[in-house]
View 1 (cartoon, one colour):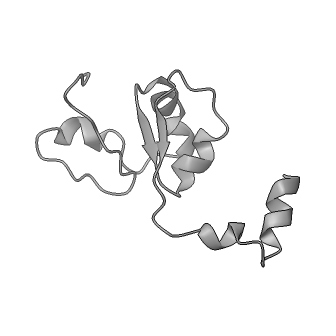
View 2 (view 1 turned 180 degrees about the horizontal axis):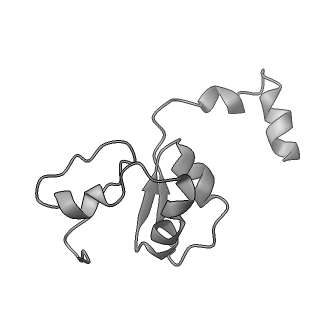
Length: 92
């Protein structure tokens, strides 16, 4: 089953949170992290939070320019000049 607009699917690798798309979503539950590579690479839009999916995404060549990051924490302190993290990040 392929989803097309206006449908979006959130993949939760630990728990199936769907009713309507239960069977499709269940295909993505409790798989090894490498299993998700093809799905991420071929998604039309990708939105990740700070998770293992984000780490995987950073190392993939994806087929879309619609890639978004949503932070679930405030990491602004990392860029505060009074912390040495700023110099470390600039070196990366």
